[in-house]
Length: 258
Image (tube, rainbow, N blue to C red; front, side, top):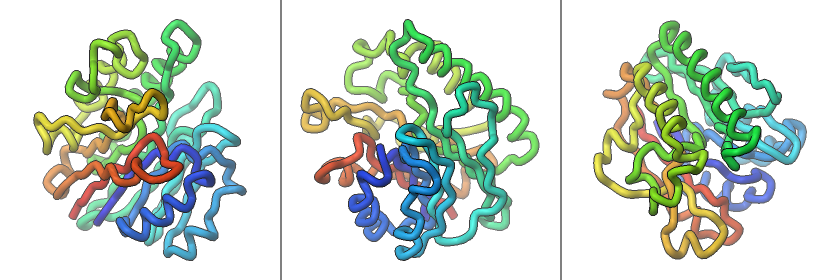
């Protein structure tokens, strides 16, 4: 089974790129983040023509998450945590993987910048709420896949120049500790688990030639619960979509799981 996660930075603005990518990559399930549209404006019919069901938790102009899936995803929920700003940032569902009922959690974590504003407090509060919920969730179901745009750079190796980001909301130590707390509940950052020292990125800013200079960061992740780790076959960061005309500033991460 191929499960892919991609922050598309507006599903309608990138629709041609997304359709071409889906045709080429042929995912079974695609986690989308930052769709930037309300449910009623999501191009569900377009994706139906490509063979995909759409499950959407949208928001006007900002945020928003969705699943595209060839087969039905059960028990879709959009109330995983209580978001005090009522932003559309988490959608969950359930599928069977190798006869194991598996929870899918698609996240778009707040950015948090600038750090001297309410945005940073919101990010910390959001992550705290998510952690509290995940502690309970993994006791109920040991088979969980969390993926999406975490807006967290886990380690120094995961950004082109970590010194520049020491006081950034994506790399501040207290934020990275939250990521570690999540992993310590019983998860693996699968990319780093399979690539101990490889330096690859999932995001390059639109400004200052970041893509051309490879000034990137790894902020999109697959966290796999320990119970599913032996099912994970490979993970790949596919940089090709970032090189297209009118690209998202993120690129897809591709998981193969049996």
